[in-house]
Amino acid sequence: TLGYNGDLEMVFIELPKFKKSLNELKTILEKWIFFMKEVDDLEVKPDVFKEDEVFKEAFDLASRINLSKEELDILERQSIFIQDRR
Image (cartoon, rainbow, N blue to C red; front, side, top):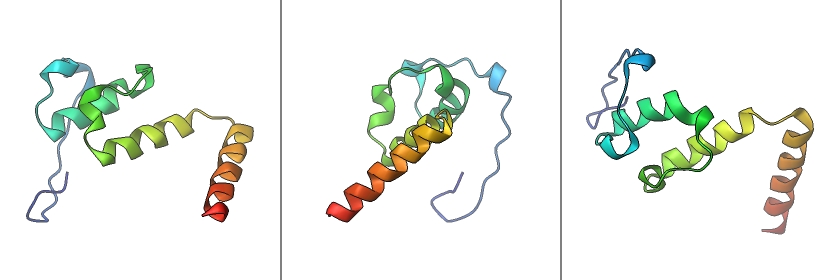
């Protein structure tokens, strides 16, 4: 994680040992650990993640990973169309 002073902090986590639930998440680090562990099983974005724009991007990226090549092509064409309209 990138600290407020710009220093890089490395954190090693054993995901199976992380047992906190959504309502127990307090720090940004705990939220990232939960995200990495549970993103494949989440059907909707939990409220605890909606307040931070970085998690919006992370959820968008995670949803694209599971798309087929055809679905990615459609998504890209839609994005280009929206940009062209702007």
